[in-house]
Length: 120
Image (cartoon, rainbow, N blue to C red; front, side, top):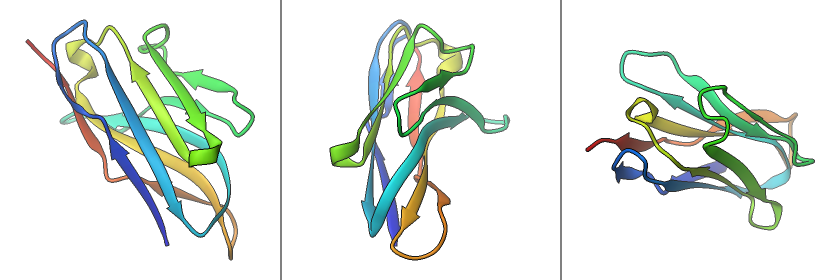
């Protein structure tokens, strides 16, 4: 079994910063692309940022220059540093991982989500 455990969400004033973490555990052989998605009330889940196994990154236009995705392969962990937060960044943030386990082909897994609220 695989678990993706997220942490770091919370309430912050506009202009503030938060750092999300997502740690993967289980019978993992390889971790390929890691990503963060978010879903605001009444909206579809959207891509925030991804990072490949080689370290290449991609960002939604709405967060470019403010958010930074990174990974620590030794810890099976992905991070999302969020600066200059805006009220429109308020959403549940989900970690996503493309993993290869001891058996079976690579599959996508999701974390349980962590709430981020930017409000005064």
